[in-house]
Length: 569
Ligand code: DON
Image 1 (cartoon, rainbow, N blue to C red):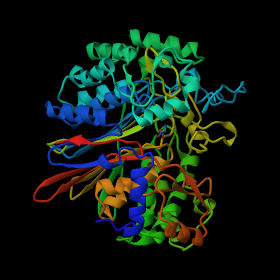
Image 2 (cartoon, rainbow, N blue to C red; image 1 turned 60 degrees about the horizontal axis):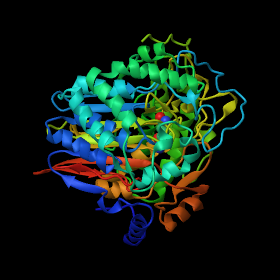
Image 3 (cartoon, protein in one colour; image 1 turned 90 degrees about the horizontal axis):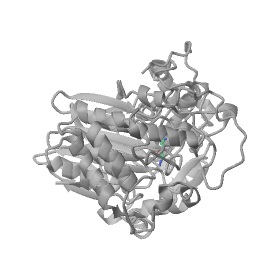
């Protein structure tokens, strides 16, 4: 049952979903009984399902799906990027968070992007977005290996095999990849590997340079990248593109295991990403505010949308002031989440009209502390649920489409350095202005919004969810989760429904052009005083709902906004 939209407005949205560029809308959701994978590309979902059918568990399948995504959609993720994985182990009920986010090279410093240079041609061409300086030390290969070694049951080479096959034999270029290829064509043509790609819709693309890397990864493990032959080639290319990364930076890279953040709200236990993500924090604070502001069983409609937009303003301010790499700066997480502060924000959000973001600024008593010494040591979200009940919620990224838009050792390099703040209050590609805690520094991880989430009830997982889309990741993830858990939608309906977004600054409530909020709801929000502006879409969400009735049902959905499709059995 869907209660969010009136039948008429739902029909309008359904037509839009079918008629616009939402190519995968018809197949974007499916129900399974045993196991399911929801990725934003069908080939990748199928790879995950293949690994599950071959005896792998959710960790093996998630790793294989990540590797396949890196082959079939190099605009969004791959071995040159990084990400976060939240893993639920059914045997002992534990939840583990793996942070394999990129980190800055040792030679990074706070002023490294305060440079005046001739603008390069093409979009997203600031020095933190394009070229060697933009690339952080990749975490993806180490993250994949850690996921498989700690939780998987198949040998790494078996997990890598399907991606290698796709890279060698080729795959059909999707609408999403083709569109991004067109948008960044000027820059892709400059790269020795990417200039050879035919990214026309439906073209058959092989990835021989990446196949070589995958073969080496399968034979010797991630060390071939973190200091071995591939790593040496990577560093040579990064430096030739003006970067400062060294072989020591690669050798010193470590995956971090962190305590996930969690809260209880609306009768569910929400477990999500801790710092260096600010996304999980934003979501659990928003949920606590909402529970106080609108009660425990909110009806869908304008009052809830209004309160939701208000609930995000405070956490986005906190992000700007307090967030940085938890390995290097002290974050007052307890103070930021104190009940008293949540009460104050909830009281404002419960009022009928919007407040300026600054009204939500309740500074925390805080010992900033000295900086800690670093230890020596385009995005895609996927969900996997296996037949034993293990759940993997993984978000993986190279940041902007095709990352820093050059390859190194055959690998498309990320431009995650754009997620650091820079002097002068300049915003990053997602309009986020970071604070001094998030300035670049040696081996520092930039603050993220990625929020892989698992929601539990009665000790059992009921939903795996997460998104790609920069600052919109968290607001989209939260809305889809609420659509399923509070408003009774199926995963497919929840993912396809219209979404809103507010990030405090600017003081603008965004509504989607691709899946517009019904006009009456937009009018109601405008009537309360919200400044509404369009945005093409609010992120791309993948979700699997786990229903335990007399028969177990896995409702899996990939977002029609990116044309994905789930697989399973
Ligand atoms: O970590 C982050 O928050 C960003 N680098 C994510 C970028 C992203 O989602 C781009 N996606 N479509």
